[in-house]
Image 1: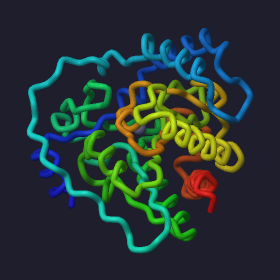
Image 2 (image 1 turned 180 degrees about the vertical axis):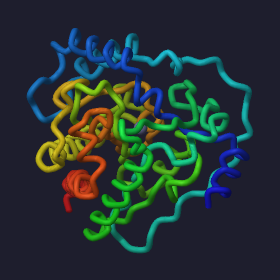
Image 3 (image 1 turned 60 degrees about the vertical axis):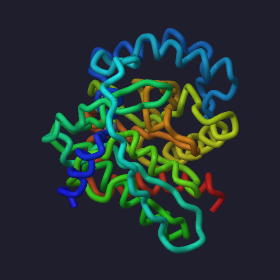
Length: 313
Ligand SMILES: [Zn+2]
């Protein structure tokens, strides 16, 4: 399967991105926190819901866009040479009548050894380009984020399936390369998908800990989908706060929410979508939780509970 995925990615010119953008360097993280702090007066502080007013939603991300962009992933990179976009196979829905949820486990186990493929520029929404994918982060003990993302995703899937939810994944295993962020978005955008949840864990300076929920600061699919994405984000955020063992982030965003303008998975989504950073892998306490099966089960149960709440099941 790995070989097939590699061949597909190479043939299609597809590669996914998220690491350098999702896991900025320590210096960038610091500037992110600083810029948010300085601009947080208009952002929500103690409520559980993300910003709901247009002024809030549009003001915070502007600061983020101008200060938070990792230097290695320019938002407006030069348009790369045209690539031949081979139509990608869709992921078949499981049989049944329940709602379909797409889970998107970030990165992949083979990304680290295929830098040329994952560094390739692909469409990232709003006419911008970014790397196909990234390698993700890891704990100080070496537990890789891609493995955590994959394990947590399978646990979430199991719980959702027990409640009659049909689940599709954006990658079939943890041994392949990519797929690229735009291909992942295409899988999630298939007709009939109720929502897309991207699963990640952060790699931030070790003093900070906790989860944060990212939502699009530039809603790509209109007010109705944006409203649903906010509701999804809130449902998962609240469930994480209640039962995951992680607290709302102490180092980034506001009360566990963090609007992003640079995530292709959100910028390309035509269906309700949210993007989760489930703890800081560089923090000792978070790493302990993420590295244990019981901790991952607890986190997965919280994410699943949030999704089920969103679905009304
Ligand atoms: Zn990640």
